[in-house]
Amino acid sequence: MYLDLIVTNGNIVTASEILDSKQEIGIQDGRIICLGESLPRQPQTKVIDAQGAYITPGGVDSHVHLAQSESPDGDNWETGTRGAIAGGTTTVLAFASQRKTDETLLPTLRDYHSKARGQAHCDYGFHFILTNPTPNIVDEELKILVEEEGISSVKLYMTYEPMKLNDRAILDIMMAARQLGITTMIHAENSDIIALITERLEKRNLTAPFYHAVSRPQIAEGEATHRAISLAELIDVPVLIVHVSSEIAMNHIRDAQTRMLPIHGETCPHYLLLLSERLQAPDFEGAKTVCSPPLRHEPRDLAAIWKGVANGTFTTLSSDHAPTKFSSPYGKTLGRKNGFPVFRDIPNGLPGIETRIPLMFNQSTGLNAKISLPQFVQITSSKPAALYGLSGVKGNIAPGYDADLVIWYPPGHQFGQNEDSDQFCISANDLHHDCDYTPYEGMRLQNWPRYTILRGQVVWDRDGGRYCGKERCRPILEKKQGGHSYWADWWHWNGNDGW
Ligand code: URP
Ligand code: ZN
Ligand code: ZN
Ligand code: ZN
Image (cartoon, rainbow, N blue to C red; front, side):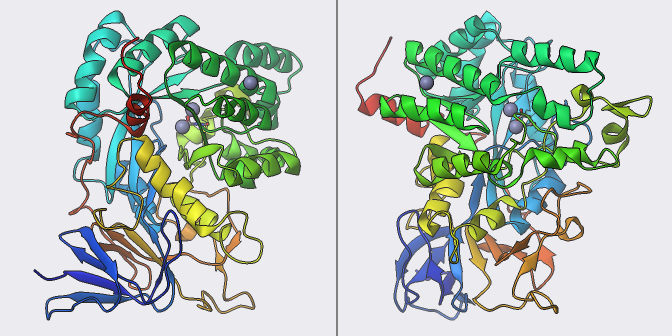
């Protein structure tokens, strides 16, 4: 028995602590098998010297949109996941999406798998978006997807005309999710509030990108979040409210958690870092930051979400990577009529798969850190892994886990030649996703992933200018046994069987 790889001389950050630099990581067959001092080296053992840098678990991005049939100009699996590994993410959970006319889901899931297979640079799995939950799907087919196809979560929309479900449909799905022990993800915004405001704005020709944010006020998110929680409380089932942007919604989640309900929240870097003023950029550039829920208006809105990250209200922080090329025909024509912007038609979503981990790492180190490094690991890796049935496999640095690691640059590394040369400057030109912009253009960070390791193999080597992972990537959830997630376990610990 020998170790294939030892990572030495780094400060290992786990979900609970930062280990001293004497601790080495011992890897065999793609798995971490030990942590310890002076691990035994054989001639075959490769050694990577982290040179005093931090080592964190590979990121788990549990909310990305890749090659979805509704968004023709987004990233495909090749481009999206090469961005992922270049930004320190080694596992992504994307969406397979039911078209309203699909009477059965299995062929759709197969289609989505075929788009990813052999293309992805990192490990991946799927959530299923349900837009037309027929009795056959809810009562029969979902069980097959969970038990045989490794689906451990569904996503439901309370808004967007082509996708939204009414409360009864949501209740039916929650009942099934409860029986199957899967996580229900909910996009919570009140669609009637949005429709009313949108009509009124349009009557007054207020259709520029900024009015997208006006049309989706915090109260619309707050109401729908509270309703979703009420429905989940009735059925007694765990749910995750996705991409939470506002304090009012966050407070409903916190209230529910205080009452010991298994209600989870997800937020995203853009709700911590960007304000709606971005939507007012000239020349239609505001369209680049249209997303739903929208960016909020004031610094105190960002501060509120930071508070929820720091106090544990949010279980996960994901990118909600949903790119549309600004210069593509789709990005250009949609959202404009006779040369005027029409916010209702602007493709929603921001690119962010590559910047998520570096942005959050940057907020977890240095004098102005908003959270600790173990908290960074929890919210970006270990908790999303656990939420979707990957605990013990993904999202931490400990024996038994996949050897998915990010090695950062050591302190004092020079990224460039100018006066801020110890800082990394984000630029769309340097990113690896297939989108022609990043909302974080020009932002300076203290660090960037130097190496990304996927199951024991370097798939991103920034100085070597190299990324590869295709030979290594695998669909981790395709045949996962049972599909039972962390929250199913929580469920059974609490003695809840049957309804
Ligand atoms: O604006 C967003 N979030 N676009 C992506 C789709 C979704 O609702 O997650
Ligand atoms: Zn959504
Ligand atoms: Zn409430
Ligand atoms: Zn999304």
